[in-house]
Length: 331
Image (cartoon, rainbow, N blue to C red; front, side, top):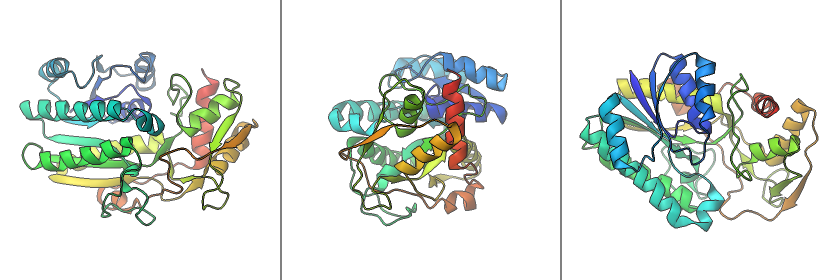
């Protein structure tokens, strides 16, 4: 079975590619490398000892996407391509609306033209906003978008729901919580260009001496230590959820939404302390004002994914920190 993975050279996409290849799927990656590196493809091949098809295209490029579909005839699509930095989306909202919506519309239109009916979308827990109670459950109505990034995820979820009635056989929307960690090989992990937007790669680079100190945004939240609380999930667990979603798509029609999280919240300071413990490295940090668009607390109820897909997170916060340390020690 052939699976198209848009954004497949990115942090999450590369781990999904590994899991798919290990499970016997043929993988086609579409990525423009705007936020990823071509050497990740070689790492995927090294880890799996398998080949894959690679198209260096912008997913919003209709002609390039048409060529990919014509030459490969994928059976299913996992869609991750899109911009994802919350802070940047606040500063450059038009960039986010244009890119994230255009990519999805072009992809769905091309799927329709080629009668590809199985679709999995990389959504986000940010769609719940700050009004819903915790833990978040999939039957909750989306909340008020805290930032343009979250708004694009809400819009795309609605587009998928509407599209499914006329051109999709099945669709799974996966609402991610906070992926961290790296592959156990230490060959792939999160290493963004420039200053990291996410917490774990920032901690990693401070610990490795590439950055001088960590800014912790906010120490006055209504949490046990004043810092933001998130549901951190190991990226390998997250990737395995996509394999389960492919299986679910093949066996069920219609649209289904699943949270992918651990069901437990950890604060920023807890993550720092855990990384220090497993690495033996002190992480210097200072507090900074809250970051616009951030919520104080977010964590999942992931029981639906376990009940219907047979998936649950298995790796611990220590596993996330240890694998991250191994990855940055290798590069």
